[in-house]
Length: 240
Image 1 (tube, rainbow, N blue to C red):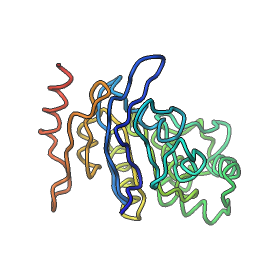
Image 2: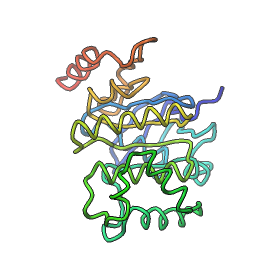
Image 3: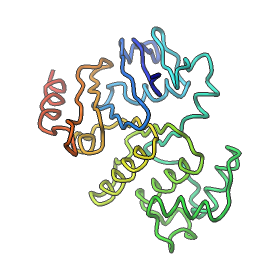
Image 4: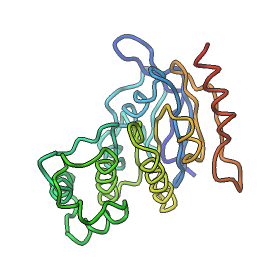
């Protein structure tokens, strides 16, 4: 079976500096993978390469079996990208933001479908007609995920999605990510949060100074990856 996302000996430079060095991994449909690392590890660079905003100096980034550089449009059509701070218009409400951005993607904007997606992400009914400027970060993230659901993008790229969220909002977000994976979405998230990564991911790729230095899988029958083992590896490389 062809992986949905794959990096094959991927090396990327930015401003003349090598940021990724011979990175390889693959992700199948319905899996949640976390790219874990500290600042400057190359996490966001990996996402931007899958989106076609950066080109490798060696190796390949592939989306659904096609090299991104050869067909950037097809790669972006298959991907919904959620940055750390979702760009939504503060003077518009949830419905208006969804209608505007979905119209740009030529996706449907029927009220019933919007409400179904907002219910899926557990955005309270009373909040949906409120201006986005009154929303917490967690609520804004929910609207952005609802947009990805409505676009029916099979791949989600999430950049530090729980940064700045309170513990309850993080738990809600992680449950939503797992639900989307069970529906067949393929999810790659980048984070520096060891605890969150262990609880949401099927596999963690540990990235340090642009190199893949460890992989951790969720054991069969368990609900999370071993937090202590991942933390120990993360701390060891951070101290190096």
